[in-house]
Amino acid sequence: MFERLVVSPSNFAEKSRCWEGNTMVGDFERLAQEFVNPGAKLFYRVCGQQDARGRPHLHCEVKGSVEMICQRCLKPVEVRIETDRQLYLASSEEEAERLEATLVDLDIEVMVTGQSLDLAGLIEDEVLLGLPLVPMHEHCDMDSLTEI
Image 1 (tube, rainbow, N blue to C red):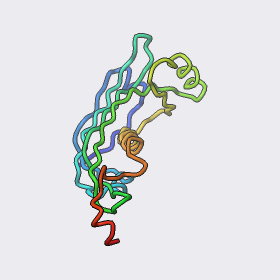
Image 2 (image 1 turned 45 degrees about the horizontal axis):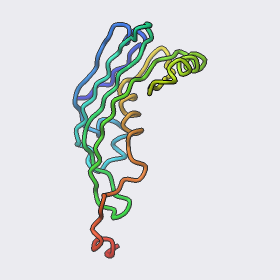
Image 3 (image 1 turned 90 degrees about the vertical axis):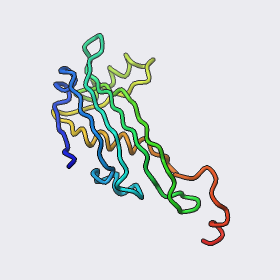
Image 4 (image 1 turned 180 degrees about the horizontal axis):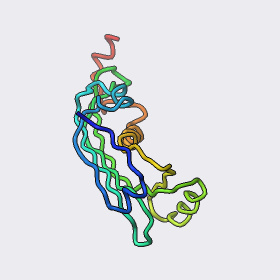
């Protein structure tokens, strides 16, 4: 059974903790609504780290293959999920703006967190952000389109 993990984000990063595993997309409330196959497996890994200046960040990876509805032919289309991002942690909007200004040359996101962070929610967000806006087959079977 998949268990959600809620952590202190700064403590998680400072102690270089990791949370990883395999689960089904159906274990995530929001993801279960997006996919045809709620039994599809996802691999996830969230590792806390600090950079050379001691700034806390998370390395978040999610991989898997799911099926969505093709918006052209309305049949299932396989969508590959592969996210790999560094998320710097900030305790306020002001701190986030300062961090973004110092990290402007790097392809890094800054995330404002509170005293706790639901890592399963973070994984869910990363998957949702990585999905195509309009899932479609590269080439749909045109015969099936005329039946609609």
